Amino acid sequence: MNFLERLKHTIQEYSTHNAFFIKETYFKYEVLNHEIIKIRQALQTRMTAKDNYVGLVVHNDIHTYAAIIALWLEGKAYIPISPDAPAVRNTAILKSTDTTFVIDVAQTSVYEANFTVLNTSYLEFQDFQLQESTFNPDAIAYILFTSGSTGTPKGVSISFDNLEGLITAIKADKAHDIYPEDRCLQMFELTFDFSLVTFLYPLLHGACVYTIPKDQIKYLYVFKLIVQHKLTYLVMTPSIINYLQPYFNEIHAEAIRYCCFGAAPLLHDVLRKWENCIPNATVYNSYGPTEYTVTTSYYKLSGTTHLQTKNGVIAIGKPMQSIDAIIVDENHNEIPNNTPGELCLAGRQLTTGYWKNPEQNAKAFFEASHEHQTKRFYKTGDLCIKADSGVFIFIGRKDFQVKIQGYRIELGEIEFQARKIITDLNFTVLDVDLDTGDKTLLLVVESAIGFDDAPVLTHLKTTLPDYMVPKHTMCIAELPHNRNGKLDRGQLRTYFKNKSNG
Image (cartoon, rainbow, N blue to C red; front, side, top):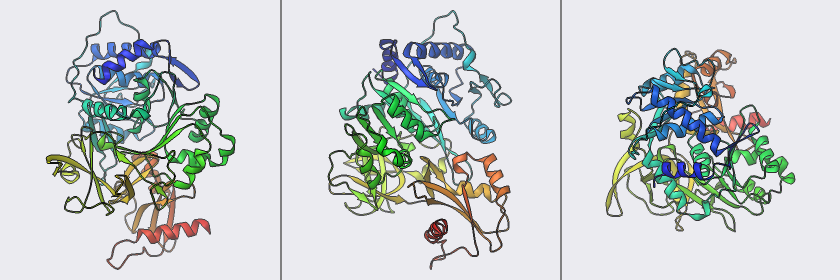
């Protein structure tokens, strides 16, 4: 039984159970099922067989979640786009996939000029029997677009078999199981791949998914859900507990039995304080790139007296079942344990590649012999060490990518857009650490007389998602360079930190 068949079975079996808690309202599985059926009926009457890729404007509502499942049951792939991102960027993404059909619950959709738009909030039941599609494991389930260094976002296509591999790998470890009585946190935007785990895995087990309204402060709403609704199953970014630190004395969440972190480095000192707030929970740190379908490794933290860390950052753990993880040098040769190198991954969850991007595919994937077999590996760009225990320890990024709010960003894409406005000055964009442990983006301009950043920030806000727009600007008389003539970003980060603290 594939995961879609299991999902249909669960929706029917737990029809009277709560499936979602969205904007202070519960929605039962039978309501979710009704929405799925209405959307499927509309898709079968309005779409053609050629419409394999559908744009989905993702909102925090029952219609959006139902649309994802409906599209999958029709054998279609969804391309999530944020209603808060610039429409011109979203349109370019959708056109790059030859998409002609968009699902949007907005009364007036900005995409009506370029696409056929289906509004799912006003659909009614139709009097005909649904035609069931054949499950094709090789078909694409979704395409997520991540930042690209050339100014063009990169599309990562994930197949139904990739998703099946993810679910199989998670389920192989009973410690991650979810039960019908669980109350599970879903704090991620649906344009972010981590959301797949936090809504799909609970729905496969008849549990209830609790989401975060967009008009709420995320960490405070998580606090509210933990205290008032007694959540039992948490998957979060480390930034949540960073911001919750002032409230730790008020949190004694005995109901939480499982807590997993991911999408960003987890700091050792904050984690140990948080564990006191959740005395009955088993705590994990997780890791996984978008190209390898969400999650590849876990590191159990509870009951571990000596956590393996590097510079205060907790290890990313051991690979899940059926995942090949190796550390290689510049020539793709495996290197000994305890030696820094690039983490590379192979296995069932690996994407077939970047959408219509052979040049990037040639850079990111390679074939190598491993355990007497030739396997296709993905170069994550993450520098790691494999300890003798088999645990992988994250060191840092190899390339020009950073993570902000869990999203992986190519700084080159931001500089590409900024260069359209800043034409006569040297500048750079880099990530800097805040006192909270989070990262933010800094625009550094080489100028001794100051710089008006309003025009460039206005341009960036109209061309890039908000999380890719620098929140700070700093001027410096001369950009520092090392002895090799390369820009010294470490010196700039130190200068920013001293300036902020001063």
